[in-house]
Image (cartoon, rainbow, N blue to C red):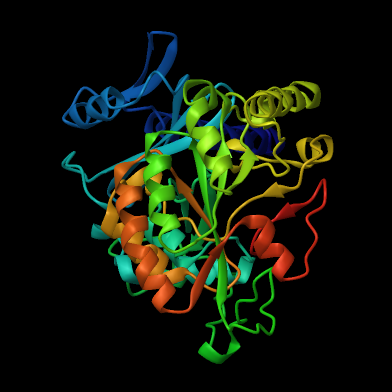
Length: 420
């Protein structure tokens, strides 16, 4: 056998050996990637529910989560799965039509036991870093928003995605991503370090930008702190009780009325008008206008305006969008000034008198517009308790129009008015 033939045979032997080695490694890698679960799809009353099935103890918790989903609100559920260290993380995404409206997550250890996120990350440190992230990114989140929000977690290789929901009246969703290096020392699991990541700068107390309301304080002859209490979704029988309480202090207020309650309670509308409170538009049916055309949205305001005019002979001049849902398109086609709010005690959610009172006393400042709903007895009780406290503290309750007039700020069409 010639020397060149031996070289060729030797070379081919090496190539074949390398090929076999690569093939074996590839097979082992693919085998390791084989899913340890199967996807289950259940259609229930028109809602498409997708979830993983493991054939172990995890399925009990997964099924419990699926069973708690409100299929009257949610149209579809899907999920993401990631494994990190010895844990399995499932992030569920809940949709209303094509829009994600909420998240949920489950985290399991290697024994298939459900664990809480604070087992993995010290909660106070996590919240502090979320606040710092919000500051650096300029997010429209208060410390209170972060504290009360529902939080859903997705643990990536070197960072953590946190989805905040249920923290405001707008049904907002905010995503915060924190590199694990930010939380090092407060984490109980192993992670891959991102060596290129630079830590966020801590903020000194004197570096924080002071809050400046959209309605700047001005010199006042009577030195009163003017605020506007607003009430959405009436009129109802609770509206009468609220007005009785306001009357005792000669206080003003603005009522954003929805058409279907005006139809039910025309006499209460007449009483609001008779007592001199400001009446404003909240659409005929409390629709989320951002889902409608400009023409349809305008029609929903016009129908309510016509209804109110037919009862009291005057048309509302201010408008608040249901759910606070407004975009540039709707803003351009609505002729009335849009009134939002700067303080939201979330009375619709807690329905707890003490929580509403505490939130107002902690947050109310001169020039604020406060959002209430004249739908709950807990709100009525809160108003009755708050009024003497606020008036004793030199607050004065006025209508929205009176508030902005006192600050020399005209209310103009195609503009949004709220504290920023």
